[in-house]
Length: 109
Figure (cartoon, rainbow, N blue to C red):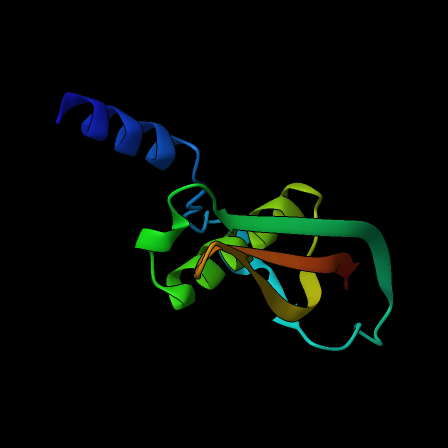
């Protein structure tokens, strides 16, 4: 029993479950690159899940990955994040992670 509990704790600690930061919440997610006078700040990769992701719903994994990407874009000074949505990763017969790849842009004054 103790070994099972220890293994569960190790798996849970290997997971990434990002909460959206105040600055991350200000980053606007868009499907197409902004056409305004925007500066491309570079690529952003957001991750959600990990070893114990099989215990988390797919929509929650996707939300955590998008939160991580928005937080990282905000840290770069972005106002917009262009992305096509998350990719799900599996392990065995279950989805255990989600990844969001995008490009950060700073738009406006």
